[in-house]
Structures are given as structure tokens and as C-alpha cells.
Image (cartoon, rainbow, N blue to C red; front, side):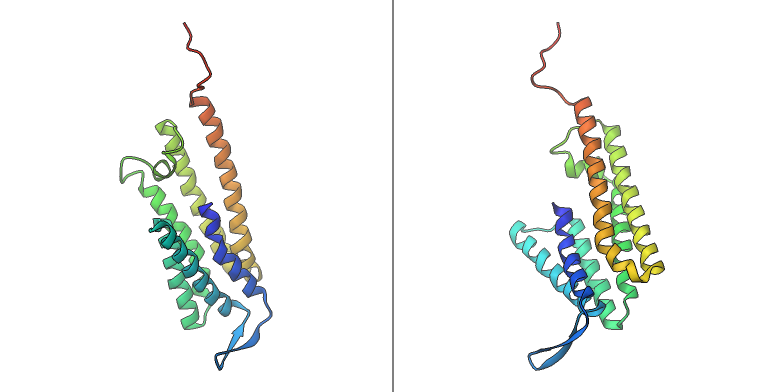
Length: 199
């Protein structure tokens, strides 16, 4: 669910980006609404509202949410300041690679891989399986970052579509695969409370 909350600002960004640019009068000022730069402004505003609401409800944001928000403010702000979408194209790759770095570093920092710290309260697995699962997240974020970078600078006309729906599709497929992996190994290593002990 937390993964999909992150896509709310992106979906709003996509909607505004696809609008035909038009002049809008607001408080005596004229603004262009539609296209990459107004969509970037909407992305920043929506991110502040979504994560601000989460902070008020939860009294905290997770590290990944802070990274996503800060990246949006930095790369989105630079896009608007320098009037160049190149900065925004780097946002998704950098964020994905930072996540990959965090998951990879957890093998050497702390007593458990990061994915075990996230899911360990709900799932019980042997240590080697937690390691494999954590490495799968590292690989996913590295691949996702590379895919976003490749599409952004190779297929300019499709990069926004991929940024929203390509990333969403990859995330859904990966989470489904992770669910299958967890279900299979939970069955193998779990305890059936209905089973009777053997004599």
C-alpha cells in the first residue's frame, strides 16, 4: 500500500503533463497549465500534500518517503529553476539507486537485512532466504533505475508514460513475484498449527 501511495503525485503529474498547454488567470497573474513545467509544479505540490498528510497521521515518515520527497523537491525545483526537464529525468534513477544502496548496505550495517527489518514482524524465514530476498530488492531497484534512465534519454516522447505506468507495472510484477516467493517458503518453513506431533 505504501508503494502505491508514492504513485499518487506521479499520476497527477501525468494528467497535467498530458493536458494541452493553456493560459490560466489566477489572482491577477497568468500561468501556463499543461505540459512538463506545470506538471512538475503539481508533482511538487502533490508530494508535499501527500507526505505532509502522512506525517500528520503517522507522526513520522519512513526513510524511503523522506528520500522520495526530498528528491522531488530537489530535482523538481531544479527543473523549474533552470527550465530544463533534464533534471527531472534524473529523479527516478537516482531515487531507485539510493534505495538499492540502502538495501545493499544493510548486509554490512546492522544485524539484519533491510527487508527483514521491514517484514520480519509479519513473516518468519531462515536467514539465507532473507538475504536472497534482500538481494532481489537490490537488483530490482538497480534495474528500475537503469530502465528509467534509458527510456528518459532514449525515447523522449515516451519517458513520462514509462515514468508513471512502466514503473508502476514493474513494481506490481515484482511485488507479485515476491508474494509468490514468500508464500512458497512460508509454507515450506512454517508450522501448521493443526498438525499433530509425530510419536
